[in-house]
Amino acid sequence: MLSSAATATSVTARSGDILYGYFRKKSVAPFRFTQPVYRTSLRPSFVAVRAMAESQTAQRNQPQSSGSSGKKQALISLSDKRDLASLGNGLQELGYTIVSTGGTASTLENAGVSVTKVEKLTHFPEMLDGRVKTLHPNIHGGILARRDVEHHMEALNEHGIGTFDVVVVNLYPFYDKVTALGGISFEDGIENIDIGGPAMIRAAAKNHKDVLIVVDSEDYQAVLEYLKGGQSDQQFRRKLAWKAFQHVAAYDSAVSEWLWKQTEGKEKFPPSFTVPVELKSSLRYGENPHQKAAFYVDKSLAEVNAGGIATAIQHHGKEMSYNNYLDADAAWNCVSEFENPTCVVVKHTNPCGVASREDILEAYRLAVKADPVSAFGGIVAFNVEVDEVLAREIREFRSPTDGETRMFYEIVVAPKYTAKGLEVLKGKSKTLRILEAKKNEQGKLSLRQIGGGWLAQESDDLTPKDISFNSVSDKTPTESELADAKFAWLCVKHVKSNAIVIAKNNCMLGMGSGQPNRVESLRIAFRKAGDEAKGAALASDAFFPFAWKDAVEEACEKGIGVIAEPGGSIRDQDAIDCCKKYGVSLLFTNVRHFRH
Image (cartoon, rainbow, N blue to C red; front, side, top):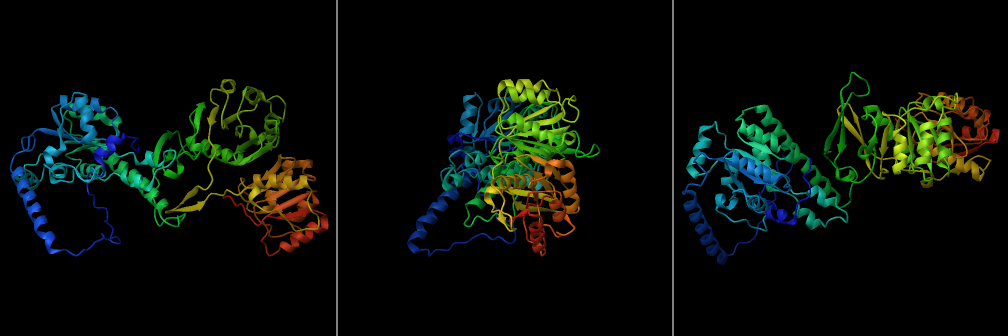
């Protein structure tokens, strides 16, 4: 988990504690700057350096208060000081000498904990506004020395350096700072990049056999219990070390993502990037009961306050399953794109019913009516608030197939609920999952895994208002036919390819999805639409490769009023001629909406 916000005092106290060598890859070399050196500058500099060296030598020859005496030492330096007092007191009761820095030391002292300032060990004051403070062998030697290597211990004894047994560090709240409302200046962002913290964390985690590294306040009690029992469980130490490296990795990914966005050009696809994810819940199973599964939340900066099902609030019902998340995501993404009050019903990630009406109750009924068999056990999504009246309709509505069976749903998702609406909806079923979600922001990066790699693309954010519907046949569509075509086009975007949607009067009448050929999808859509298909609009997610004695002619023969498709086939003229023959309006959008 990334560290939470810290006070300005703590940021100043630890800004860039350690000069940390980051240029490790062969392809990256450290920069070297050369300047002319004037003779007049040499003598004063030499005198100052020699005086400092003599002072350091004299101090090094003096034993530290807890250096080689065998006392147990804990190093604590925190931005997030949650539960710090209880940790400090607990360590002190166990006989640890606590070494600390800046604001952390002050907080501990205020809690009655005795503290040794880090300057007492380094014999060197912090400098450069706190950027350099603990970059010193007396600190890192005490963390990195292996207790089972004789010459390591001899080196510590020779220089009067004490060992650290526990290191407790978390990092500057960079994540919170750069995602705060109003933003942050580039200069402030740079100053909030922690240098010293990651260096100490990595050093202690590397030497976890001898040093307990703690980065999460949730682990304080477990660490104290471990120390009280005098345990030597290496698995416990390894888990803390893993958490430490993960903590730093997530932190570095946030810094990297932020810096990439500050570069010129702002390319969408960087040469490399890291996606930090955080476990939100273990799931009962995956797509099938024999598959184990878990749900992670994307902690990328781009996802902060960006909406979506991953950050939805669950007000009621059973825990979400793997398939629940997929279906809820599909339903929410679809309904969120409609501007008018809309209801979408989804089954197996495909919208099987969609309707827009000023009266949301009517929209709900029509969406279910489009395919009541598929709607049963599906997901219902609304883009408006669910109030008491709508909640009662959802709770009591009977299936259009028999007028008796009360409709059952896995999930209801909406942008908000009234208190009474929520109360009524909870009464429908103990298992009904009720989600409150925020609309997904546009412009997100879409990632999809394949064996051994990932595919990345921009999200498909185009809607009918972004597209030109160009009439290419003799018959120009009426205003209502054009509106039907646009509605069908927005629906078909969310149906799995090959996709066909038939719609009229802002209502989906039938859809065909996922078929290997477009003709089969078309026939499924017509079978669901029935007689209502006459005069309706038909949308296809991709062009028709054939027209005569194929999908286009079949649609015309069944009485469709207008067809919307991307165009782009070498046989486009056949589709145009076919629509001319049957007096059907044909619209080319020049935009494809494949969904695999």
